[in-house]
Length: 278
Image (tube, rainbow, N blue to C red; front, side, top):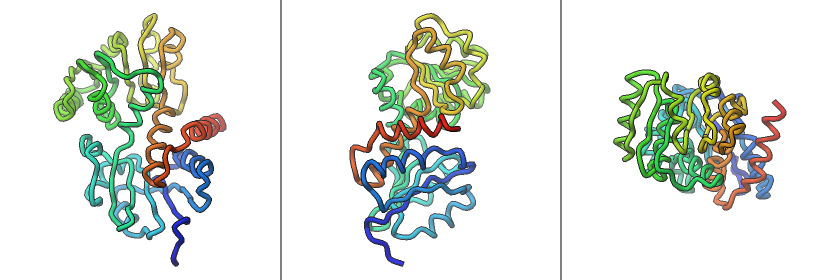
């Protein structure tokens, strides 16, 4: 079956995927941009199923958003990846070019930077990162562009500490590591990026100082976290996971549709409404 250029498909893949807000954000963008023939879905796909899924896609497909556990697994299946994606060995965006090539990018890193810029954070002299997973490496890649000094990473194991120092060397960021039980010391930094799973930072909320700097908590559900609430109560600036999700989705929409700027405000409203309804 042939498709007109106006009929295009995109989707988010991952496992688990039912919780993803990506369809809400992308569909809101399509509505605002008048892309009536575009559709955006979600598919439960793990690493084992990914090659077959990609092989079965037709010419109507414009792109894919990828979440865990596919961000690294997709790399060998692509024709090219951007320097940004290569820097952290993680792809969250695949665009299918008119000649059938699969191009991978990472919009999490510029999405983080855009979310921080929106709150007035252009440059910091030092920063702290809570956690050491995949999001933490993206945080280091973002900090490589705006942090002029040292980044301290608070981690739960020596192996994670080695990992974070390795990422720092690759990305050109001086990284010092400290044990998780000293994590409250992070709050002296002008920028703190929390990348840990839900509940992990709750015990730290009581340690937020008066007049803290900026907190970037990458969670969007549950929101606000105990840490974000305590931070805001003490007058600190808070950037949340929805901010990151919307900004990285804006960049995905622009790449997949070729239309820019994507409608940031409409996408954020749709995301907020969807979260409020849960």
